[in-house]
Length: 562
Ligand code: NAD
Image (tube, rainbow, N blue to C red; front, side, top):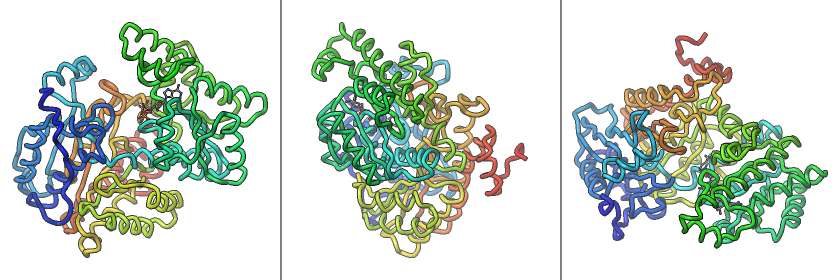
């Protein structure tokens, strides 16, 4: 099976334009989005079918990929294709309002849900890791992480700074694949930022792509630049070469002595992987990489990385004591520090309970859409439509104008913006009308990440610290997938292990096509309400007053809520 997974000669790119390879836009959409996930501009390692997130794949192997395309080309409007961990396994008679594709990826019976089981099955070609949007065909490149980080910083601004990030600065570390979005997201939110990164080439890459504005020579210069720009209310991002475990304690020490304090501190080093993800103190990067290549030194690398993480987290706690909001950004650094003896590591909240949950309570999450025409003009027009629909939403207005300037499209042109209950269906129906009136060159596909309000159970991340203690209950994402199937989404998926690994999460995906027909309008009106409505339901059930209010305002029928 390994040889079927690697094809050095494959270059995949979604078709553009209005000529259909499939029998309808419903199936054409899945056909294009599956290929778009493997576009070299989109995927991390397309020749191995890997889209993102470690080894998150779009299809089990190349023969399965080819058969998925062949099945989609033939699929009728009263048929549904079943996909089991990236392999097309059946085509069944359903009806025109049913999903055209039903996907289950990486699911294991709970007691078997370990990486060991996964690896054995994966090695034998019986399985694949679907991550979240890799195996459910709605990944859109780094725009997603930029916007998610932007929303997090905007919520921090709302909670701590009266909604205005001007004159504030955010301190963090890590300018890697995901962490590299931090400086741009901070700038878009209106704040300055200081990012510590130990690899010069990562800083250079972020400067080159304009995700980062400047590099400071040393900490003193970095702080002077921050002082200069925050005083003027300018949103400028500064990179600093160094080890976060050295720099953060120095900043905390200076702050304790009356020096500059950041307004928010977080971290996106890869502390979740102690062998490859966190540079120990006193080591050069080449020494570190040499030790990674020598199994006899692995235990030492891990121990020293853990000790450095412990110092880093101790500095975060010290800043927290000085009144600086500190959050864990989903990289498990708190757990590492706790294991290394930092007993109060979990005094630092996770970013979901701190900033994202209030949005989830309103049904807000990473709504996104893709122009099947391939024409960027279609996205410009839909951007304008969304701005027209929600004139009062300042954060969204700011995001859309800045995204239009600063986000380069990868693969088919796409846009993400967080919309909530009562907003997503308005946007979706407006897009459908634009298609019907010929204002767009082709239909639009609408979807979301699995990291969303009603679609994920993940006790170390999205459902950490639920008010009623229901963190690990995964009935909710299963109900979400069933509801979207009943409502007529175009494809629906159920996954396990995304984001945090085997045994730690279950989550569901949803994608729906706006092809300009009345039938699509009826489906959109159902699905785009129900999908995020089920998230409001989940949070209302857990006892969040904001979700209960939201449910009442929108007339959701929740039998046990009064
Ligand atoms: P990455 O491995 O690409 O980047 C990590 C960066 O940290 C690298 O550039 C590395 O050089 C740098 N680094 C390592 N040790 C350092 C140290 N001691 N000092 C300074 N810099 C150091 O990883 P990524 O894709 O950017 O993800 C970062 C982390 O964020 C991961 O743990 C990931 O799981 C987590 N994550 C969270 C979310 C979220 O939604 N919150 C999303 C994606 C990823």
